[in-house]
Length: 86
Figure 1 (tube, rainbow, N blue to C red):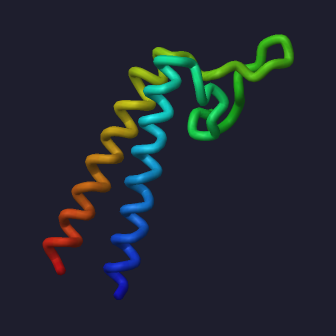
Figure 2 (tube, rainbow, N blue to C red; figure 1 turned 180 degrees about the horizontal axis):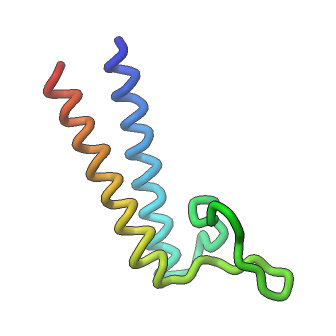
């Protein structure tokens, strides 16, 4: 029972990560999702002329996407481990 709940939560995390990667790639191509909550910084947003700036495309390409892909691989390994235990 408990492993089913863990598996469900990990699958939810995987879908959230995949959604974030898709939004990031779409942002790089078209500029859509520029103010998506997943791109928000933890502490302070960059503001210029009273407007909140979207994330820098190099940051999305070189930091956000690789970190998300790494988290995705880690979550998939967790699923594999849970399935091998069952």
